[in-house]
Each structure stands twice: as structure tokens, then as C-alpha cells.
Length: 505
Length: 125
Image (cartoon, rainbow over all chains, first blue to last red; front, side):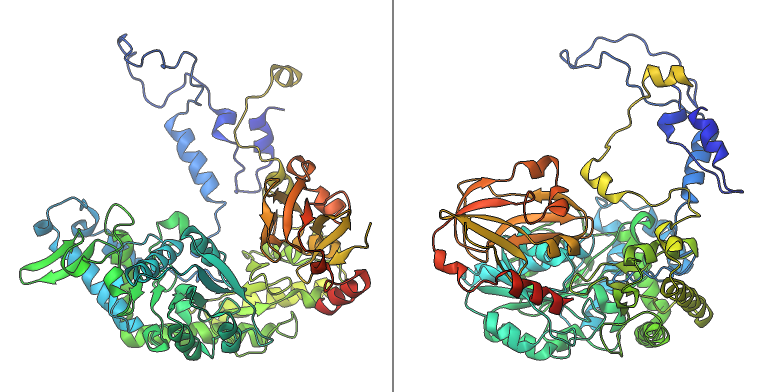
């Protein structure tokens, strides 16, 4: 059977299986007829290609069908509840899209003269104003491209501040429950990572931090609410302790959705916090568009914020592009331009359409949804920490003990029920963690359906229906991927079938 | 050869003639799941007790392996480069990570013996 015939046989109803372009494209075929080029003298000094490039040739309908078919294998928030913890997969309002597509925003080029982009600069400035107000912090750096880039921005500012004070500090304190990007960022900035253990309540004790403090500590990176979905109740004491030791407090703002409009990081003693616009402020994730991770700074770190800055002058808005004036002590530039304009317009639309009271309700409803899940499921699944939680409900593998079913099996079985799994095996400090974040944009009916499915699966697991889990997912085009083999022996490029295999068909 | 000693961070060490063979425990590999990559130090590198000695990456997570003792790395297990699954198959024998010449053998004293370590991991589970 040819590859294409095999794929046709694998169609499931109107969901169409699709091979790789390389498997059915033919060299020489083209969607567009062009005359052969005139012969030219090579100026490549002998480096020109001598063999055919071997790219698959395709017609336009083949290309369209290919990408439409594989796009139907995407799971997205537009299709169903997306409970991926730490990711805040909330609905992306279509009003955001409408505004982002306005020609006055969408058709700009970052190198246009400032006089022709006053509206765009005002939008950036206004968004920064909202972020300053929501964080209670005086300066917001708009350039960072995503959360981890924002972390880098924050730590570079901390390093610049210590350098300016003539201090050589080498250590950064990071809780063991942190997102992996925190230690990665600290290491990238040249710091030594010193882990802080959590307590039995899933939180950090200020005593554990005091034990680690010293003149070589540059700062702490703390997530609040933390990755276990719990509010760090000693956060102000932590901030005071780190400040007394001459360090700075970086807050990972990944979980801002739980406190937006309710608590201001500036009031908690935070010196720098990144804000994932693609989480809290509903701009698309991943394939839907780039992220954006503006960073808010305290007075102490504000002078070191990256360039460019958008400032309001007597005759309109302008960009501070060099180390001068307000940006004289900046640590410099961390990317080519001023940030993700398309995300700025979407996030600002979201803020202005919700208003301050609406944003407060976002946090309240997100926390309510998560607690509804936690209370509804804690006896069917198992919860390592007592509630109430913040915006995420954390479950663990205890309820699967003795069933022969792993958390991974359980997650894969959820796929057969039409749900993308929650985040599993993170945070690492909880055995078999299942971090579930419903967000505020799911209706009660949607949550109830999700709860019913998880209860049904938990009951099946406890009843010993092992194969249902170990064989899952059964209804997808791709069954369980062998992640171990893929990681140990990755196949990184397509290779044409050997002549022998072709002859055998 | 001395008996095996264990750390609270789930490394084991077995000392013979002043040189310790170091790896991660069977319990650790079970928690990690299938190991897909092991990053080992260069022979000759000086390790400090409690400092990073190696990195082990599994399908679930990447974790640091800490030096159970201080000293100089004299050899690493080259077989792990081609077959990281050895850590899963034989964590406390053929899946060893590195050999280290101990600079302070007294560091072994406050480590757990096998019985104490098994009790420790049962408490953790």
C-alpha cells in the first residue's frame, strides 16, 4: 500500500489523516507555472548547489488541504476547556482581534517617524499606565517578548543595580516549586541558584529564607500565588527580609490572574514583576501569536529599565532610544524594537472593555472556578494541600496508588474524553502533580461537564479498568507517543524511502 | 570496598581505595522515569560536596545530581552517552555516573547506610 493510500484508510469519519508534505509532494510539480530562468553566471565562488534541492512540489489545493487538515488536529481554547495549569488558557475575546486589525495599528512599521505613529505610542503608554496602576509600581518596561524574557529583563535590571552600587553579589534564592524558567534565567544571568524548600502547607517560610540570606545574595525569585496555586502568606516578611539583606525581590507574575485588581505587587514589596499579557490579559498563546511579557519595576530598579521607553513630552509621545535623560542608567536594549504591538492593542482592549471593576471580577471568578474544581474533585481525585486555593486546583497521584495507573495514563485517558490534560508532573515538589487551571471564562455548565468526566475516569481507575488508561488515547490519529525513544533517538529529518522499500510495494 | 553510602538527595557512593563510584539511587531513577540524557563532568574537574556534579534528564524533568563528597573526578561512565537507559536498568551498578578521588573521607561519615536510606525513602513516599 502506498503511503497516501494508507493515510486515506486511516481517515476517521470526516476527520482526515494527513501525511507529511515530503511523503506526497513530487519534485517538478508546481502550483504556479513560471518560465525557466535565463542561464546566469554564478557569483557564489563555487559554493552554488550542484544537486537538486529535493523540495516537494505541490499544487495550491494540495497545500490548502494539507494545512487545513493538520489544523483540525489542534486543540484550542476556541474548541473546549483547556485546563493547562500555569498557562491561564482563557477565552481570547474577538473584540481584541478587531481592534488589533485596525489599519492604524496593524499597518505600521516600527521604523516610521514618531510623528506618524503618535496613536500607537499613546496606546503603548496607556497600556503601561494600566499596568503601573494594577501593579502599584512606577515604571513598566514594554519590550520583553514573553514571560521568560521578562524574567531576564528583571534580573538584568537587578544586576545593573548591584553593579551601579559596586556590589558583586552572586547568589539568587529560588523556591523548589518555581517554574523552571526562574533558575534558568538566574543561571543565564551568571548567578548561582540556591533552592529554598517549601513547608508542609506548600508555602515558603520566611525563616527558611533568612537562613540563606547573606551579603552575596542578589535577590529572590518568588512566584505569588505560587505554582501550587497557593498565596504566599508571608510575602511581605519575605520582601522585608530580602531588602534588609540588600537584595531585590523578583516576582514571577505568571499567576497574576489570581490577584489582578485585588492585590498590587508593589504593595507586597516586589521590585520587579513580569506580566504575561497572553495569560492575564487574554492575548493569544503560542501559535495564535507571540507572547508579551512587560516588566513592572519599583523605584529602586526603575532607572535600570531597558530601552526604548515611551515617554510623553510637551509635543506628544516619543521613544527614548539611547542612554539619556530618563534612560541614562538603563541596562540597554534587549531586542530590536519596542515590543509586541499586536499584543499591546489586544491587551489594552481587554483592559478597557473590562474596566477596573471587571478586572477585579476576573480574579475573583478565576479563583472561584478553581475552588469549585478543588472542592468538587478532592474526594474523587486527591489534593496534596488543603484549600482554599487561588486560581489553580492542584491534585496528585495519591488516588491512583495501587491501581497500576500512572498520572500520565490518566492524562492520556482524558484525551479520549475530549479534554486536553491539565499540566502533569509539575510542580516537581508534588509526586504526580496534576495542576488544573480552569480560568474565569468557563461557564458552570462547562466546569460541571469537566468534573463529571474526571469523576468518571477516577471511578474507572479505582475499579481496575487498567487497559482503558494504558491504551489511551485510543481515539486520536496518533496513539501514545514513545517519548523515551523520541528523546533518546530523535529523528530530526525526513529521509526518502529506500529503493528496496519502494520495489516491495 | 566500603559499603554503599547514601545522601538525602538520592545519590549513592561506594568507595574503594580512596576513589568513590557515584550514581543516583534506584528510588531516584524510579521517580525520574525514563532517563533520556546524562550530562557528566570532565575528568579532572574538582567537585565540592553538595555542589552540582552532573545533570540527569528524564521524560519528566531535568535534575541536578549533587556531589556526595568533595574531590577530583577521575573517570565518568562513557556508556551513558549512548545508552542513558542504563540508569533505569541498573541505577546502583552499571548505571554509575562518575568516579571521584575523595579529598576528605570523613565526609562519608554522616551519610546514610542502605537500611537508613530505604527507611528514608519509605517515609518520603
